[in-house]
Image (cartoon, rainbow, N blue to C red):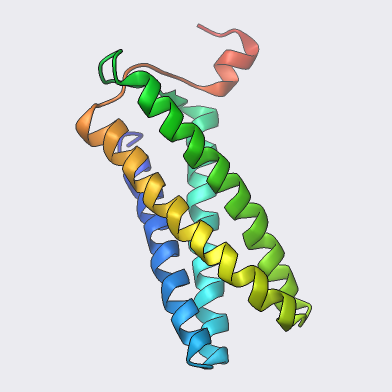
Length: 153
């Protein structure tokens, strides 16, 4: 069961990116009601990813790099880049959604353009991390965060 969670969470992040791309296109075409619905669905897909990812991290753990030691610094650099982008993308996403719900549409449009690009890049890098860690170089040991925090073996 735990082995399938990364694939499921990655599917949700891919779905969120597809929905953001569709929603952006709808906004350009001024189909704003459809844009709103699709973007909310994209945000829900991203939230599903986040819930699965955090739950897995807490209860199952993060998967160690399974590739060669020579590639590990490159992977970790790429992973760091992805994590920073994901964090910025999440904060920008929440801000962009908040602006829309408060009907501050001029700012929403400005933030939305940047947020969408960041989110699309984040999704792509997240999918690459999944492929590297679970398909190309199956990861090593995992340890739940709760075990790390409380010293359980």
